[in-house]
Every structure is written in structure tokens, then in C-alpha cells.
Image (cartoon, rainbow over all chains, first blue to last red; front, side, top):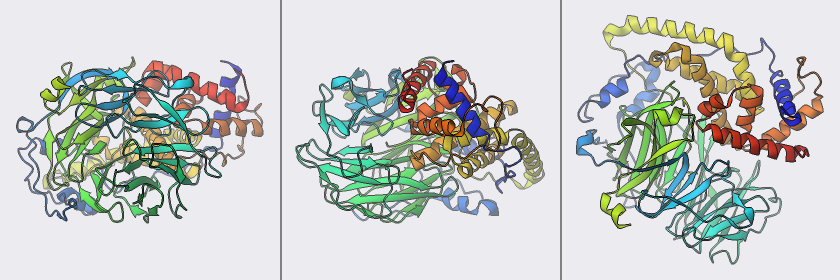
Length: 444
Length: 193
């Protein structure tokens, strides 16, 4: 152990001793009791159809009872408003499904512009990761060109954004604030230095959204503040956002801008106990922004978010928690995941205002951490959901699906992992899956 | 980023499982067993886990919250644990997941909030308060995953295989992440090695 390692060990251990023995507060267990085996969710899911009657829930679970019953999702741009859900069939035999398209390394992020062209940020053996591209629906993946000047993507700030087949942009480091931008599908990259707003010399590039080759919006994040830069001429000039309103979060999980100039940004805030969600929206390519008041979320862990456009978003998390907006985050509707669904949303991807897919799995205490994954699809803004069957990988069932990208109503490309793949200690292998029809792969 | 995977055992608030009328007695017994077991685990390991979360988060209240949440999740899932011996690894994974969630929510790079220790062990006695703060400040400026690897490696003395399992990454990634983290830390601390 060298000197630096010894310093880390000593400092962390000395810091830990700030917490004195006997100073820990007593355990406060939730009022809700433990699950009883067998898992009722799985039992229910095996039943044909989802028209079963709801089991009356204990009074202590009254809040959960509300979300356990129906899916009632705000509709799409035509003013359709959903009522009580007609639950989709759970029969894999009658559902379209995913099939294995190949294998690859551990994959952090995937973004598909079409059913054929996707970009994935994969474990490249270094923390900065490697960006790969497929043009055949996931059958083959090739690394994009290396960034010039020994730069690499700073994926800790956010993954490169690739909303179209040819245009991607991401934070390139180390060095000053700069974007790496490609307009030819990653065949080459151009480094675009960004003008630094006053006080943002040490900011991180938090999120990027390029709706077209000309229109990009960048969110810059500091410890306690954030701001935006935007271009509408392919980076020839950049403009800083006019005054960012108070209450704006310093970072964003999701930034989505559309060719019509609308943008939405989402950030989960709050605490471990009480989750909140803040939305920001712009109608002028990111020059001016409005911020919503924080809304309480049904779960503190709303970890998966996706916006089909700058007005319609779905966020989901643990315990069947789902929320949707159809007005750019001004208002949110708390929805109910069907009770039979696994308890943890691992990925959400919305292709349009009406078409969303959600991947879920049951979290468990095995080394893999997950089992029993499902992917559900809605094509009516969440009124009804249909399960898509998932393939086995090498004879073993998948344990989780993550990440997932659904570029159109027609389907998704995602990454699955079996329990062995998740728990394995070798180079992490993952299984790429697609729900697009085979001809799209063959023709790509 | 569109979503985030807790690669290991993510905690999830389960939907209520309503026991049938005939199952009330058993449900009560299960609940009592779970309470006793989880409370015993808490009494035995909470200090270490709060310390771990505190090192990760630099915020005592948040660390205590994360640990409480983890044990709450363990309690809710007690009936689903086929191997009760895995309860401690499970809750530790949950604490780390909770730390990741908290860090992700805060996306913090705050560097303050480190307090003087009330007492120091023999191992850490030689470390001055200022040096400790300097190292912790630098540690907290690292990307979350780099910090987590270093904390697991040098605070908990976990082997690479266990770090890989807990974090859901390969051993090669553990090594490369640790290497990169130490290099960054060295730069931040003005060291050349």
C-alpha cells in the first residue's frame, strides 16, 4: 500500500470515528409488515388477464391501495384523458416480444434514434466508458471514433446524447467546458469549446440535448446552481439562458428538447424519506426557462424517467410508483402500477406522447439483486399496458432489463442480464435484446 | 441520463401483501420474527453501516436516514429472504444503493461538513485534523463511483471480487476505477504518485 492509499485509509477511518458508538438512533421499522412468501405479485401475475379483483388492503397500506388499483394516465396531445384502465394481457404467448440480438459488455446507457440505429455507452475498462453504435438493430456494435486530443467522454456528468441517427453530443474532458459533437454518426468528432457563463468555470456539463444538428441545449451544473447554454446554428454561436428562475435545481436527470424549440428538464429532489420532483421547461430552445414547484412523489426513489416529447413524461420508481405529465411538468398525475408488476422500475423509455415502455424487476437479496423482469408497453398514454415476452440468454432467464431505449411505438432495443451475468466477477457480459421485427435488422 | 440502475439489491417499497383471514396468526408471528431478527441485526451492525454511509455522504443525518431505510427495506422483505445469512450483505448493498441515490439526488460536490473526530484510533491518531479534511475534501470531489471504489477498498478493506459484486461491475473495472480514482486523488492532493 503506497502513501496515498494509506492516507485514504486513515482519513476515511478517522472520519468514520466521528460517529461514536452508542450515538446511533434506535431502529424505526415501517408500520407495514414484511412480505410473506410466496410473492403475491408473482402469483397474481401468473393468472390469465389482469381483471382480477383487487384485494382489500390493510389500513396501514391505504396509500398503496390507491396506487395499486388502476392505471389512470393523462392522455396524449389530443386531449384524451384516460379513465379506469383496461389492463393489458399478461400472456407472453399472445404478446409481441423481445429476442436476443447479441451480447456485449456491461452497458450503462443506450439511446436509439430508430429501430436500427442506436448508441450505447459501455464499460470500456475505464470509468469514462466507450460509445458504440449499431446500424443493424443491435446485431453488431462498433466503437465510434475516438475523440481527438486524447479527450474522452466525462460520463459521470451525463451520457452522450444521440437523439438522431447521426448527431451526438457529450461532455469531453479533461479541460475547459467543451462538447464533443458528431454529425456523421460518430465517424468523426468535433470539439466545441463552450462560452463559460460568469461563475461557471468549474461547472460540469450535466445534460445535453440536441434536437437537430443545429439545435442543442446544454445544462451546466455547479454545487448549488445551474444554467443553460443553447445554440440554434450548429454551434456557430452559443447563448446563455436568460435569468434562470429561483427554485431551479442545480442538476438535471433528464433534458429533452424538441425541434419545435420546446424543452423539459427533470430532477428528483427531496430526501430519502420524502421524494420530490422539479420540472423546468422552455419554449424557445432553452433561452428562457420556467420552473415548477416541487411536487411530492409517491416514492423517494423515482429513478427512471423518460419524456416522449417536451410535454409528455413518465417517471417511475420503486413500489409501483409512477407519475406522468402532459403539460411539460406543470402538473403531474400520480398513477398506479398494476399490482402484479414487479416492484422496481429499472428503465423507462417513451417514444412519443402515447407510446412508452417500462422495464421492471423484483429486487431481491441474491448476488444478482434482481429477478423476474418484465417489460410492459403502452400505446395509449398509459391507459392499457401489454407485457412483452423476454427471451432467455444462453438458456438462463434474464434477471433484469436495463437500460432500454424505445425510439418508436414499434419497439425497443435494450440490454438484459441474467443472474449469472449480474453476479459474475469477470468482464461483465450483457445480452442485447430487441422487440423490433426481424426484417428491420436484416435490412439495416 | 434517462435512468439509473441500482446494480445490486435495490430496495423497493413492496406493495402491501394482504394476508388472508386464516393467515392472520401466521402473519403476526412472521412480523414478530422479522422485527426481532432485523432489530438484532441493526443493533449489531448499524454503527458500522452508519459510518460507511457517513464516509460516503459526509452528512450524518443523511447517513442515518440511509441506514434506517435499508433496514426498513430488509424488514419488509424479510419473508422473501430464502437465506437469512445473506441479510447483512443485503442490507449493506442497500446502504450503498441508498448512498448512490442520495448522492445522485444531491449531485453534491460539497466539500464541507467534516467534523473533528471525538476520538481517534491508534491507526488514525497520527493523522491531523487538517490532513484528514484535505483528503476527505479531495475524496468527495471524485465522481461517485470512484469514491465508492476507494471507500470499499481502503475503508472496508474489501477484496476486488467483493467490490465488483457489490457494485455490479467487473473486477477489471474495479481495478481501473481505483487506479483512475487514485490518480485523480493524487492530482487533487498535489501528489505525483
